[in-house]
Image (tube, rainbow, N blue to C red; front, side):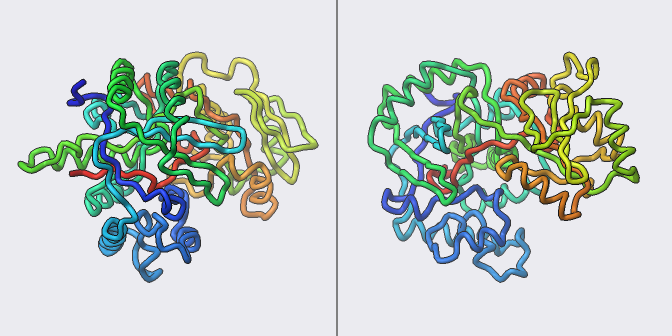
Length: 414
């Protein structure tokens, strides 16, 4: 099949040699602070953090978005290529990518995804992006002439795709890495022409793909493509972005919890009474991890409470207002705590589910925060419904685990 203007297409990936894959693979650029990255890459000259967070190789006082950071990133990237640590595949391929975290396993397809499909909303979004974060990714792509951080995409269940990828994983892997966090990342090359064509046709028949994580990376790729489009020597590869696509049925969304700095002038007793106008409030002797939508845990005054939303308060049809992060914002954060702008209000912070409920207790018990809320995780069906409606989720609605590694395969813009 021809891959012109297809939803996805194969590409000649830039990958670490098999023996270097473990030394190269690194956490995503946006999950570590610069200080954490500096420590994580210490004594690891091949770590991809030297490319994705190159400020770690410059004096600490250098601004993380200064031109010299992107120049250092390009220098480090080119050196890894010149030294043969990163090698380009000779022909266009797909790749199977398996993630294993404990008992959880998911297998996806690494591909180049269409900018045109992104621009036309066939690759659907569910978040707003920030211009400054887009600018950062644009500068990084332009400095490297490559996309190195994959966008995490989701497809609706397709049994044939799952079967084909499962067959691929029975072969010899080109990378097999277990990170410091115990998550195993395994990569297989798919270079058989018949399988490539079959996978391409299966995805082309899909009405949509969904961005799970990587809104700024995909938006930046779109901007780079638009800027290059009218140039005589523009490469066709710029019309695609690096993506890993997993079936929705295998995705794991964890809770993304909230902590608030104060009670907006209310005493604990008055705040509890106000909450009780909207929720059934039940003290709990143990931490409350919600088991369904409409339930949340609250930690206040060194005590846990189980909150059940009162009947009639859950919106019946609006896909955005129905998700639990929206319900909390509408019922407690805005009317009781006066927190209406989750993006800018410094009185609220967000705690990913990987840190556990103990982190919520710690933040409150330390006196840093006054109250914490443990939420039921957003479901993939909710995310897809919001994206299908052309709406956006509230900030910090989804925390996907396990996360992809940077450096295992990059998309060069020829």
